[in-house]
Length: 460
Length: 147
Image (cartoon, rainbow over all chains, first blue to last red):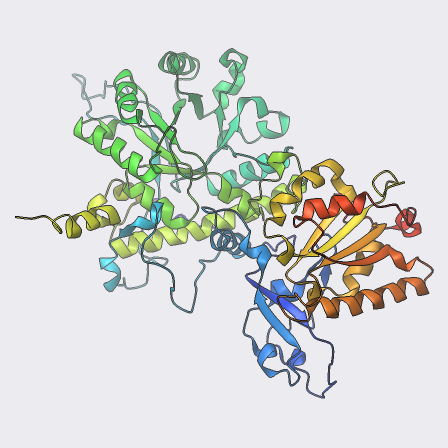
């Protein structure tokens, strides 16, 4: 048995004050100067450690406060008022909600799973991934020393084309060609970021992180420079320009390369393979209603890995777009029906914002997933997209130290890995590979709604 | 000469209740002026502390504005009244060290004023510059104006 995959975490403090859900709204004048000030009683010593971040004019009182409301209740003159912070409410957008962003910050800072103690007060279903529940029936059977102890749950997945049968020669030697396969210990690769401040520091943080985790980060061919070259064993080069511009040495040291979908994709795959027979070639496709058919054609022509990408909200291209989980389910089942699903690796990306989305997309048929915005959020990004408009980043991401950035990414992935283990353990599945396409172990809101209400209102 | 032409660095603290779309509305001005303008949204103008105003001047602002809701229309009842006292206190403090008190100014939004932060800020920038570049600026840490 291979050694257990474990991600080492370390505290990586924020560089900027966090935007918190609640904040002090007002201090009233009129302090009684009483002998036992409630500020001294603060169990988190918030008032003693108070400071002001002059880059954002944010008071540490707001970011360090744990919302116990002790000071608000006990001040004899009712001087301290707390309320919801309007800056928190406007974080991100309808999909990348303040709760998701602040959850990512927490995980990146500490490497811990976010746990809310006061129960779940939200709705039981919603759009996208929220319309899906996983079967946690095995949660009643805790293992002797837990899924993080001696129990072995593998999160390893393979990227590449799979051999369906072996052919043997007269002397028992294997004569069927074995296409190259790359194993990653975590079913996550780092995708090209949809937007980010310019400079090398962010891609370097991703590459440092990918190296520490043993996974890969996709880097555009045009972004390759001497600083990036050192990380080639953990980089997937995305051919966004002339493939002839890739030098032979670069191609020989790369393990995975990604090419855009198009007419010449398979020819290009073969050409690249002829230069490096150990190279795994991924084809990047924008998710659309045509994807199942296109995928079938590509697999028949010899494609190895299809990377199906939705937009940052998880939506495909075109009018009335479907959400990634629906379309990926369709692609997976279509290939299953054609009997060729096991030959290829499907990667899904776009709109993956939480650890549960990773597990849910794998259940819908992806072998592994690619993430983008959570990596930026790990480095304190507020998903304001100011950099996209050429305005300076409020958290100076262009100035990020790649070592610190990678620590935050490793922490985030450690938290996601732990959550994946929890889900796998609760589902009684011992391998991420076996989670793929396990739709029978999940419930989909649309299916349940149809089953329950479809017959209602029908006469006769 | 207006404040923009005079090359002044402007820090604007404002109550977020004034403009719910402040995050989007202020972007065009931030893009135009870059580090010469900084916006600091507050949940209520009553959250301002004299320290905020002084810190802004210390780190390179030539003019510091606090834009609050009209008197009597504070969501938290007295926030803007408390802010007024604190602005006055901060003005006294800077006068004591020889800076012009007018470098800190509080503005209560009136019915005639536009309701988005971009337009309000543009009106402020179009005003005549009452002060020149701050003497503090040459020695300032410039921590927030640099970005």
